[in-house]
Length: 436
Ligand code: AMP
Ligand code: GLY
Image 1 (spheres, rainbow, N blue to C red):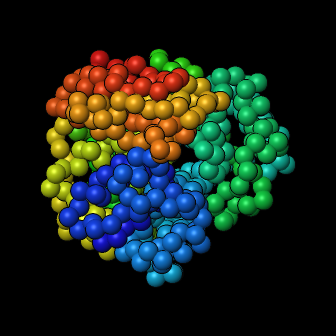
Image 2: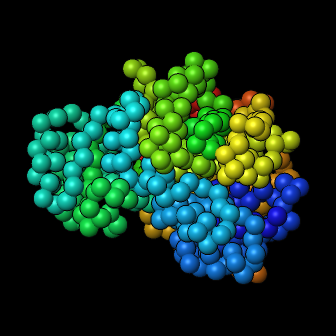
Image 3: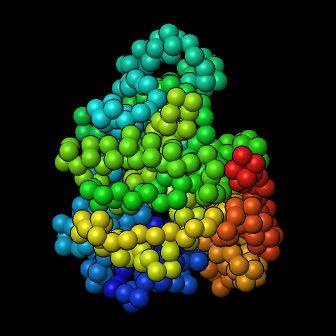
């Protein structure tokens, strides 16, 4: 099979590496890809959100399948458009990707199906800014969580520590138009910005990625991302600085609670609303004292969660087979197995990320890192004769071992072999999980 993978991050590199192990795959293509993906796939200069461009490319290459990985094209309806053009595609349809595309949709959906989540209230347009401010004053509970209702490159959530910060966040989102592009919920006006104000959840955060065909759901190993830029969970939020699996607080009892109260009700609820979710569904969960609650849904693999979890797919387990079973709605007929091991993934970023940073620095030591037993996934890298940095998150280094501590030691020893100017990585990934 000829497969085209959409996207350019470390997550896409992990997807392509897994697909490249399938005996059924004969040719891999990526749009747009990156410097690491280029060693496994032919990269094409087509943007991940360019739906017409992707359809034209798929036709010219006669691909058998398009794997749509990032949120934006999924929320825009790339899978629907590909199917209309007669091209097989993996990923949720637009009416299911709305679980990520619109916070007001997903919050109302959870309320309709009794899925545990933080209490909330939605506000639409500048004219409701005063109501939102009055609401936050009446709540008078901090931290308060203010979320932009739409895709905002991971920057749409403000945890306000006091009234001043909360009011600033409300005004910047509703009045000053801090983010462009409105809600993907068709019941909410696209011309008006909208926000959700929700209760702050205290607890331990866990991500569960799950394969689902709308009928059956197969959770992958639970993981924990580290969102802040610096050690000790300090500094600004990023796309994710490192992920570990084998998190001790995600016990069998918690997994059962999640399955019964969250995972199954979500896929059944979506299917019952004629929005069957077919793809990888990301559950962002908070383990609170009063039970597990959903922080957010994403309609795709996480980045860097995919770089930690996909390397655990069993050797006899073919990602392509899972993908095809999901598309054909026969996930229940195949066996999906993960290795009984732990993975640690540490991100190497450009110094300054997520704010200003420089690119174009030569990267060395990747081969030595891989020879030491790590897998290296490229994100912001580019081949210009030599391999150079080209983005904020540059590489993700993953190691797998029987115990999390050994996986972390291996990943950090691997990272020490890679060099580029101004490189930055967190030194405390997975510490909390190993101390618990
Ligand atoms: P998101 O962009 O929706 O992934 O949110 C970014 C981060 O904000 C999450 O990973 C959580 O750490 C935090 N967060 C979001 N919602 C809440 C909430 N209701 N309570 C506490 N933390 C939250
Ligand atoms: N690592 C968080 C995300 O992919 O949204």
